[in-house]
Image 1 (cartoon, rainbow, N blue to C red):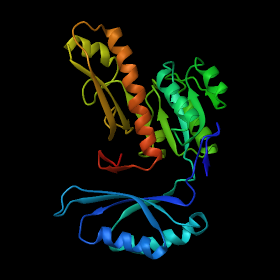
Image 2: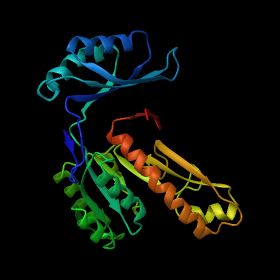
Image 3: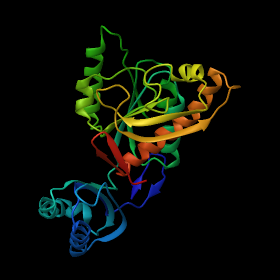
Length: 296
């Protein structure tokens, strides 16, 4: 039984998720299904995608139930590795009952943080928010009142290296699986990004690739755009150019000021980020180069 700190429970015992990426060829689905059948597993959900049946890439997500899974997980993984080698698979097996441990980075904007805290409280976000790190003190009270550790680590050009050392030490100590940048207004260095490849999610207040960087709503207003949006993506060394996980938009017009756009945008940002985080912790995302396959 998985349980949030607020008592909301879901029965995830003996449920696992298998993610697969490999060159496409006949027999993959049959071999994986036969393997699970022979292990005594019952498939709950199965999704697959091929970029091109003639020589493309194949992606698959299978969620299954297997009694005694946690006790026999190592043996199951060892047995499946033999199947995987035959198809040159990149694969991972995760256990739904083991909540991913999350670190949230914030600055002063609170809307994305509040959405994640609310979803955690309601039981819609099945993750363990282990800590919140901020370069400002503004959001300490709502974080600590939620029973979550808050760490204030100021960042300046002169102290950036030392600040990131403290951040990395905290995340290693807490065994962090996923980092969420909930409107954290600092650029992470390569050494932080390399520690968590495809495990740092950022929300950009623009419909990428348009209006990369800062002040996107002001630039959108100057261009007279009719749609504004937000983009959740994995963080890479290239600014705002990582694999996109989720996007959404809302219509605006000439009557909307920059402040109107920011207000509308905040609603989009909080929803888009929460979706992306949920899909990651539920193992619904496979990264293919600079793209994602999302089994939502």
